[in-house]
Image (cartoon, rainbow over all chains, first blue to last red; front, side):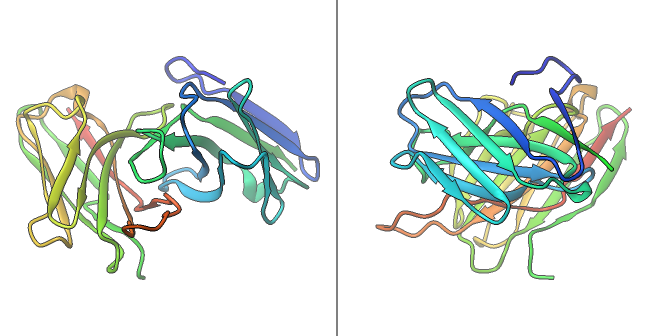
Length: 114
Length: 118
């Protein structure tokens, strides 16, 4: 989602539930996408990536889905834990390919309710 | 700790002063990036180096900003004549770009240097 100023999109989930964080991208030529997690006061941390020749990629408790038709990316977190509380960013290469600097979206804040 | 380190972590300065941030990347990484992040926003690309060569500078990088990576290892980002609008978190990241192979594109970020201009 998009945000204005200080108002990040926020997702609140109950501990143990699944979380789905969405991202829309604009460059149909982008061939690579990454999700980052940023905890308060820290730098972004890599979670998972996906190339455009894939629709789905799974990691540990996380799954990324790519829908190229509507230029949409989602991050699913299974069995959400309090430690998952953070801001999540999707990113794509500035030039569309995987060997150029990343451009970040504005992020979604995930709050986990214990 | 073999991650990306940044110094100082926090800097408070008065408008008009110069500030310099230092970044030490992961030792075997040949690419180094500077990003700026303001509250509620994602990181914005400023510039990046491959070894000592500065490959690209964003339009966000005004002429008051200069970045160097003289020996292809650590990098400095200097802001001259700081303005209140420069207040932000300055993030450094590094990666390993391997010619002829697809790299993952994963950037390893430091904890950032937070600048407050009064």
